[in-house]
Image (cartoon, rainbow, N blue to C red; front, top):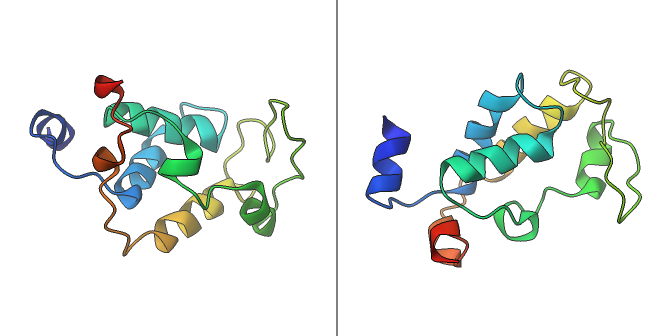
Length: 115
């Protein structure tokens, strides 16, 4: 209900809220990128990792056991579909990193309804 009201009234959405919502998708997706993408869609936000979650980088993920990324190639940084290999720890770290960030993602012109 809260998500419905948030979208209906176009209430501010923070990075922390998106990341916390992404946790709900950990058993429904094979990777963190897709979980965050689904959370963005829930809030009617266009998924653009550089804008939505700038700290969502392979360099930061390496600290949590991720594998090195080959740019331009679709791949998973952790074992496909396994969340207890550092993937969930990285998500928790991101949530902590953005806990005080008050940026309203709806104001960054990334609302998919306005595109």
